[in-house]
Image (cartoon, rainbow, N blue to C red; front, side, top):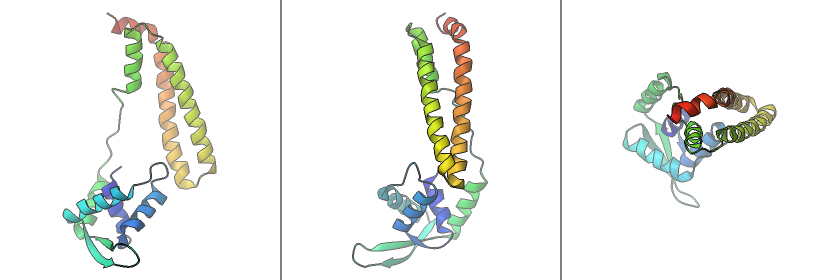
Length: 174
């Protein structure tokens, strides 16, 4: 996820302080990974330097001065370009799990045990996500569906790999 583009998009509804941006981000996108304040302010500094936002005002009060940021026309154009650009699918062609399975085979360890352990972990994650989906709002349901579909694909790969372990062992130990 592009933090900068997401913060720019949040600014399209109107100028905001860094604190307000962080709160809006965490509310809409940061359920599992809330932003750190330092990340918000370093990103806003970079966006300001690149002309994608401007300081709309500075307020002083009971604490440090608070800058209010507004998106510029260049920022709006940048968000439009980012939104129109498709995300590259991540095919996981060289996954850590595949590496572990091959190394287990190369070192005469039990690759089936690695696959079984991973299957258990995937199923545990799926139970947690299914519970979260059941209790969540529409945004939670959609993000959980996305993760669940990926986990289901991983489970299919685990089953397929387990069924082909003997052939894989022959291929990698030649």
